[in-house]
Image 1 (cartoon, rainbow, N blue to C red):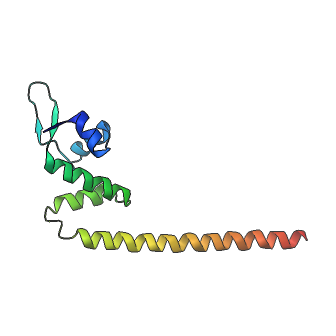
Image 2 (tube, rainbow, N blue to C red; image 1 turned 135 degrees about the horizontal axis):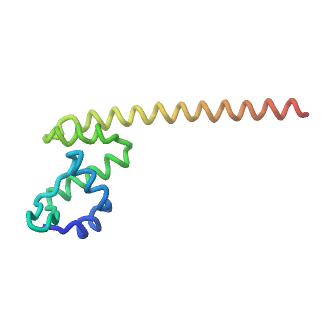
Length: 114
């Protein structure tokens, strides 16, 4: 079992994030001492925390992360990741188009000044 301070160092998640994840039922401590309310995490919690870190890095919302965690088999995780990837590719293309439009706009302004 890991104390919250040890778990923070292992996962890179802050104490505040861990408390929030517990509030929204994303990642609850494996054990909470009823006397002092200290939270303890286990190896299973560690795996789930690393998954949450990755999902957050991939741009998943809290609701999307909750959906993954509720599906304990992770059966639909690949589908969600593929969908997220496709959305990112669309965003990249949109940004490329915006860059092209900005470049064209700047060029037209330069031509008018000549």
